Length: 337
Ligand SMILES: NC(=O)c1ccc[n+]([C@@H]2O[C@H](COP(=O)([O-])OP(=O)(O)OC[C@H]3O[C@@H](n4cnc5c(N)ncnc54)[C@H](O)[C@@H]3O)[C@@H](O)[C@H]2O)c1
Image (cartoon, rainbow, N blue to C red; front, side, top):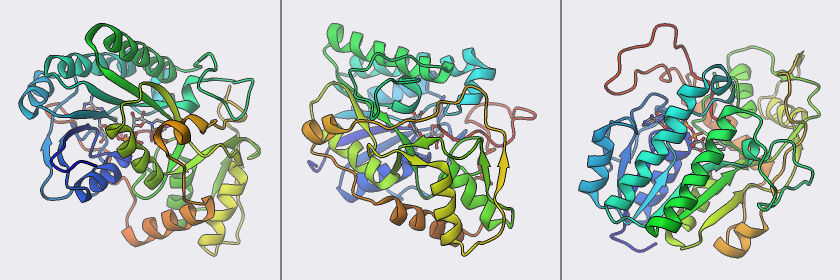
């Protein structure tokens, strides 16, 4: 990356954000994080990173963009829970649609033309006919979260056409790795690590033969860096293209923990998509990106990190958003899906 670049990262205190910000700082990039910390992962950011503790929809965020004058924006901040979006679609859209629109406007007003957005391959395509699913597949989201990501992508396209933004949506598959929220309703890797380390049997929701495309967070951070310095626009899938069953992932983690006890099988969520995997040939062609972490290595690294952290990964996840009163009953949030 070019040194002296200035990159603004929203959601930089979250799971993918912390990994990406650390990589950016290692490349000598000047980073401003905008994050209200409502779902911060609790890991420290490098000391030379400035943090604006603000909600996406607040004037403080717009002012931070104008003041910092970034060369590029990486927009990771989001309401990340699919089930939460079903319970509160308007609340989800407030963050994931309106927050994104406000940030796009601030970016255009500040003359920052490079905008990279964290979209979701898992949530946008719905029940795709083709696996691995290519970007040209017509999106058919099944949740408000997926619909909001799709709507935000629509705004990216509009800001590109009308205001000259070079906007790119990265459609991540199921990202896993150290510092992920293991207390939520998503993220089978983090949840299983938490259960194994707290002496509870691992749990499989559904028959366990449903498959997902698990991509390691360090590989996603690398994709983010490549995206920020490229001028590619449109949408690119970020995943492995490999469909792995939930049962396989849970067994691998159990082996990493030397656990040979029972695995609990519970009913899966209704309407769950059976299989997902993303076609990542566009990422290879346009960003020169390929995931480099084999699943077994990534799972072992993740389990080791959870163990060494020595505390629930999201004991901090109930923190109150900057400038907001504590919400009674909010509890640990669902992890990003
Ligand atoms: N983790 C995955 O598997 C996955 C998959 C597909 C897409 N994504 C997307 O990638 C992005 C990052 O995901 P993550 O897993 O790191 O999530 P995360 O919840 O760990 O991080 C999101 C961060 O955004 C902040 N935030 C939330 N709402 C905010 C608001 N209104 N104003 C300011 N800050 C706010 C939170 O405090 C948190 O630090 C999200 O956009 C998510 O939808 C994640």
